[in-house]
Image (cartoon, rainbow, N blue to C red; front, side):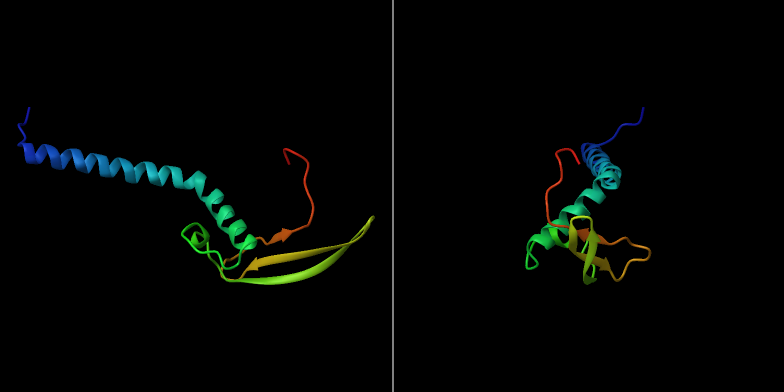
Length: 103
């Protein structure tokens, strides 16, 4: 077995800790990424002047469109936000009202 000096052992330990943190961060970012983008989007919708890291997570220029759709209960106004710098990105439609619990 190779003998390492104290300095080499500390370096190896720190390298393993750093590599583990980077690996775990990369693995967790995949499932957490959509949630962070949704959080940033909702924060900016609630306050367009919001500041902070959370609001800049997925900052894209967008086009805002107002419209109206006919329903059996009358017209329904909506506002759609479409990103301008993303290919084949879906839009977000905000509707007034509440959804049932769990939906």
